[in-house]
Length: 467
Image (cartoon, rainbow, N blue to C red; front, top):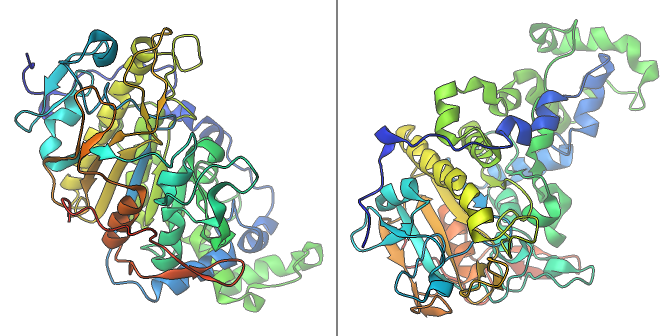
């Protein structure tokens, strides 16, 4: 029998204890910011950049994309559940199946009559009228990396031959090229993840200028050095006079007047403070941070919301490499009861807080929120109390984006083995994302051989139930 409906915002359960708060998750960049030792840094910053954030080529690419995009603030936040989340133990429970399939969790009612979630996702269950759960996602072309689904492309695959992805770009890189950022001082595509190999797929052959900025490397790195006042630096002539005496020490041998407008834009990003403020979680109240959860996923999702507000078009968030890879209690991430149980409340709270926060700020219709991993988990619990990889089907959540929500799209058979209806392919996800970002679905990019390549492959179309 179903339990009562999940609690609403006014009755948040206690924040689960965590061995790693978001401050710990962001420990290196927050606690060990770059210490600027001299004024010389400012003249070098525009050329050298910080992790590519202020690269003139990146700024140039963003400006060119911005020149052709609609005047809107559309954005995407992808919450990546690295490792492969179990569909049966989260969003597609099978309470009538045998014990070895249904697993240890009980189902609970959601906001939608007759639809059930796992007992450890009460907050998400309470706002399913604001979200859609996709239960028929085809992940046959996916593997244990973010390549296929972050590219939204079944042709982009892990091959382990040094040519993973076959040169196809991620959806974030397509967004960076064809949309650009929503603010001139912000990058278009940011990753908030500890492992690029496992958690963030990049630009393929589209070009490094369209890769994700490593957002955790940016946090805390934009403070001005002692003895330099922003008010003085905003005056280009004062800046020139202050630094001309250092010219003999500079490899560039250049003053601001000699730098092109994209390099000057890099200076503006530092001096204007927009980037610094966007990446500063200390601007948020303790109450807000508690709502998201002071853990690795919660604070990164909160940071993603700040980046959306500041003008980033596409943000990918992941807490830890492989943290949903629940093969059993004999491996690093454990099995279902010991491994999955502790982390479900953190992703439950993060998604709940993000959707409600975006709605309260009037940003939900412009922000498409996705929560997914690379594949599902095997229907039968193995001898190690875990579930192995399962590429036949997985579930995912979608919220915001001005789409139709409050529905279940697709279904699996009675034991969760395969798709029964409402199939959603990687290319359908990409078409839905690009439509939201107002990118022409017929757009093409040019590969290294000079051939035009489509951003949508193999008949991908926006998911019809959502649009």
